[in-house]
Length: 358
Image (cartoon, rainbow, N blue to C red):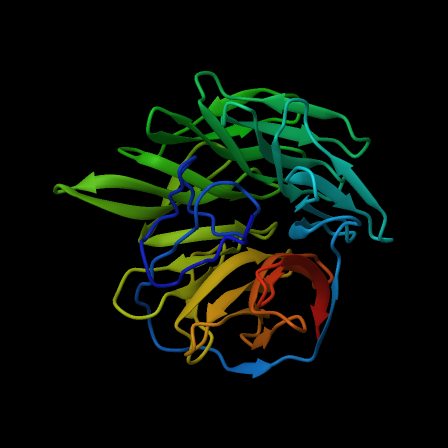
């Protein structure tokens, strides 16, 4: 199995043979390659400088390929890996570096997605019939699987500090958003006149952000949304794709609403929007943000090589790569600025990494 390579210059949504998703991230899934469109945005608003960074490879022992998908506030990392016989399997890496492997019952492919400060993990797995199901794993290792009623595919995308999970599920060819409480109650919601709604993140106040599609004058268009805990929706604009929302209500994401390379955006809780990109890049992809407002993601250079970047709240953008990589994709950042992610070598081997930009 090879790394899913993110393209910054093709189709505008992520669509695989298994499910539709607009949350760009590397994984070990059997599904096809992720692709992401470019779009236009405004002038460059930040200066990028090469970063001094120290990164370590954190592949689980015995793995042949590995990803790091998320990191919590105390430095616990989750991800998936392949070994010589089967997989992907899920793993947890403690802040001290101890590894625990896990799989839900009947899983042939386990994909952890998000971990909260308590160590509770949300993710999904595939069964032998190629259907995906949601799971939640508590800090003691107990795993509960779940599906919204009528779901043929279930994909959690985030979990907050209270253990509330958001994600989407499929019925037929349509994607629907859901919220699952820590006690297991599942409710669904839809922005008005929408279809293919994909939540990306949920914060401690229960605010969910994501994107949806609707048909306007015979044309399918995409919008970003913010769903408040009371169920009220805020439309974030045409071709805006939120990726994360933090405890302060700050939203980070990607904007593709005019010609030119795709750029990232930061939207404050008051609604002020700042667009940014890595100068000279062929596309900037925001993936995650921490409680302090530092953003991580990836970008392509003029040679179509993919690198990682970090943007701090003062607007400073720093690029980085683990040593020996061909392609870098950050996937998570802790409150202390520890970044986890995945890189690929020239031989096509995928590794998990952990480190910090200085």
